[in-house]
Image (tube, rainbow, N blue to C red):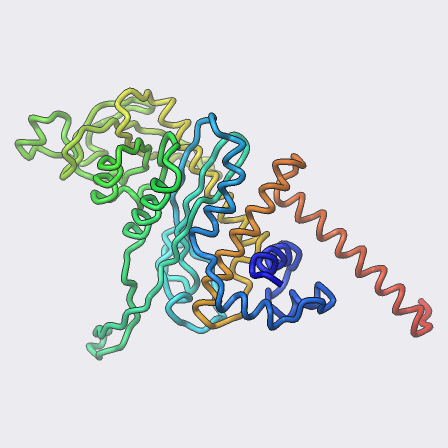
Length: 360
């Protein structure tokens, strides 16, 4: 059987199964018509990296040729608390919980267009380098360290997307991707963006103030809700527009977010509408974890782990295609599969009872 056919079977299996995803269980689902060794070999020697995901997403994108597209960039930590630490599964700081978490650090690129959320690439932050660092007690410890930062991987990912697919309208990301290097990179490649930014970043109200070094904190500008003004961010040579948005939390407390864009023609409501599209990448990350078995491979071999991640994203693409033709969301589709599995299990129980002549 060809590698492509094996990969397709494995992605279908990742959508069907609800426990640990293994080559053996994938073979069992197929009544061992395909041996588990075939799937193990495919995971070891195949290449299911960012290019594979792009090719999966490319087919869906063709049907949305002339519609506006938003590119979202974000990372997520997929916890793997019981797995052995290696270059793929390691300790990474998770800003959503405010502490280090053992797991996989996935950097994603997602195109939102129409009703579709289409992954177009990914990177995994790996810690393949070893360094010696002193702990709090002054003792030297051997420690793994990432070769590339999350922001470096994000730029690498966007560069690939530009080469493959340049037709998108805006890049959106949260404040963790508002580094000076990222903003320079986006502008260099003529990419329009709407990005969250920390309230302590230094800004000037005019070019003259910027040249004179007269900066203040962003939250000292006294911006009103929905107000937009032109600013000069420290160490960024071009001007930006900033707006302040106020939102209500679930506990009725209020929060605020500052958004910047290099599209000087955007009004506050347009900036807000574009940034809200970023939420789709949060939904995407949740779905690949809960519906496509992202962190459910028990393997401890790095290359197999990386290929499983790519195939898990491929499984998401198949689920997204089903969503678009059925008008059912991922969770409704997954529930339908679960009901079918429960019905099959119930039929098997009845069959076993008859075989062994059991009574209720």
